[in-house]
Amino acid sequence: MTKQAAFPAAEDALAAAAPATQQQPGRRFTSFPPPSWARGACRKAAAAQVAVADHLGAVAAAGGARTTAAAGSWLDSVVMAAASPRHADWLEKHPSALAGFETVLAAAEGKQIVMFLDYDGTLSPIVRDPDSAVMTDEMREAVRGVAEHFPTAIVSGRCRDKVFNFVKLAELYYAGSHGMDIKGPTAQCKHTKANAGAVMWQPASDFLPVIEEVYHALTAKMESIPGATVEDNKFCLSVHFRCVQEEKWGALDDQVRSVLKDYPGLRLTKGRKVLEIRPSIKWDKGNALEFLLESLGFADSSDVFPIYIGDDRTDEDAFKVLRNMGQGIGILVTKIPKETSASYSLREPSEVKEFLHKLVKSTGTR
Ligand SMILES: O=P(O)(O)OC[C@H]1O[C@H](O[C@H]2O[C@H](CO)[C@@H](O)[C@H](O)[C@H]2O)[C@H](O)[C@@H](O)[C@@H]1O
Image 1 (cartoon, rainbow, N blue to C red):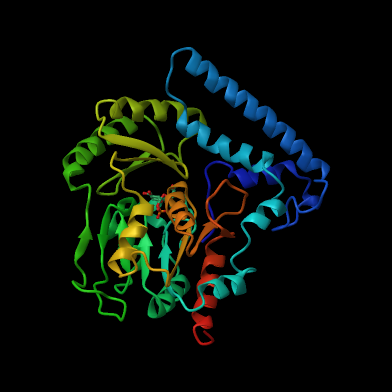
Image 2 (image 1 turned 90 degrees about the vertical axis):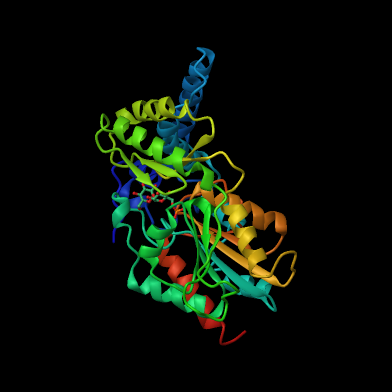
């Protein structure tokens, strides 16, 4: 499936700034000094950054505490991509998990690997319609292979049932709603602990009525914004603006905030062309990772090597946990340099699949 974006992705915008002859797939910003087209893009981005900062500063100075979260999101990425250090420098800090595969294996030597996988943008490519974000059979086989050897969990912003319907593997752990709904494998497998198939953790159950109320309020508001949709993810909600005209992003942001002002128990975060509404409890994908490690019997264990692969801001919570633990690795899926706590990177879901295959293959040699 190809990536379909209503708006140019940051990377596309940068590519557009480059003369066709100078574009080399997978080798941007690799020469020093940067080619002139890249320096031009950086200058433009820096100017854009100032303009955005000025705009936001003016809004704040005028007493408007809000920032245009939706509109800021795309600009943030463009500015970050163009103004950040060369891609090669970034790759030195966050090497490809494929190129650095042997190093990863060496670090995991003698330890139990536990695999954590985000769904959208990691196991399936980003597409316009969230209901069409299917996973290929090849990717499913890759995940199945990994789960045969290592305890494996899907950690997603989606509601658990929906992500299960995409992945369709009963031998996995599932943490839906950004980790607020955790269930163990429903199929017997060698990694299953006691209470197979039981719901293990739902810390936001009290919020269900309020989430439902806000879902209806937001759905009604979004009727005035063509292309906007609200996705019910059980313990949280997603307001999608991938198919909304850019001029309307500010209005959409206003509408969402106007609903949320009556619900102080909920908070707003940003994902990939999506605003996420969730309970203001201290529970995120990082907590879910810790919870699952503990459930698997690895609390305070030095014999475990968790690997977390994800592409989104919400995955950063899990990357941070791993960094603080000083164990395992976080792998960010991205084509452009991004601020991240992950130690490794992969460019896209097809590379994730390749990494999973390599890992399975390595079990014969470990
Ligand atoms: O934690 P994840 O599994 O990565 O889920 C995060 C959100 O992913 C989905 O939205 C994103 O993917 C869609 C399909 O490719 C795309 O259309 C959308 O623009 C992206 O933001 C999902 O629909 C959301 O509910 C999840 O919260």
